[in-house]
Length: 390
Image 1 (cartoon, rainbow, N blue to C red):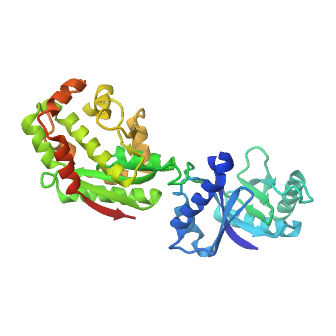
Image 2 (cartoon, rainbow, N blue to C red):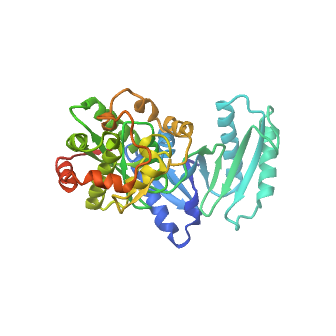
Image 3 (cartoon, rainbow, N blue to C red):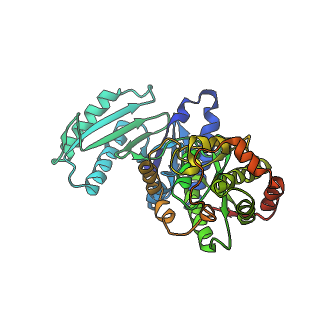
């Protein structure tokens, strides 16, 4: 008898011939999440993954594993050899643990999954007999097959049987790195960390670029964004953080271009710089926290003008979401409290009083003719600072 963690995979199970690749990548992410805690073994058995470690570490492991994309449920299990006497003993122990955890438990149901069809007893027979044994063992319990206070799960697989009473929800999605690499335009706001989280959940390996206007913006403002990247790295793993000073470009735009176009012109430069970084590093896409209609640079017209300057795909996972739903994501992933700290960012420098909301591409391109765009982008990239955040 051994305590282990059983983890259930989600849509990876639908990957057909590629399933093994996704499972191997998922195991790599599991190792990344718990390697400093330590573990004895990780193995697969008939569609599930099991982790063997120290009993005292399982609670900490569960908290880490909930942040590993590709996992949908985590269950602390009792692993036993496949015989009815062992199943009976483990079921009693599991129910004792559940009652110790919650004394209000009064009803239960046994749910048996016989993945190994060679096991002589069938699922309904196992459930009935274990249910009767638990009724005799615990005077306070009754069976309720419709709405029980707790389920006792029995999984009979190829090599072992597993008994458990909890299914802890994880985020699902796909393992980070199975869907290419992306460069997230990370500001100090609420939206962009949520966007990075959502694309990492779809298997994108996330790296970041942040724009500041030092000394017009403070060093503390950039430190805030590094903290956001560090929180994000709990889900994504190691992040390469590119820091760009945009002030020279903003001064040029402010001196030579119409004031009302400041925001949209700055945004186009941000995209040019991001694409330059992405192509140099072999990233496959740019990622933004843009949300349709939220600010002047996020109207349909503005987004079209911004798209014009790059050929890489731009992923905008928040584009049609309500703000309250984005805030809920930020709170869930614990970036919200940092995001609302009152530090300025590059977008607040030279902010126009009446920004253009329906820009025309030919007008914006004409305004840019007075700027040496290639030189400005090159200077910004050459003076970039790069950090590793883990």
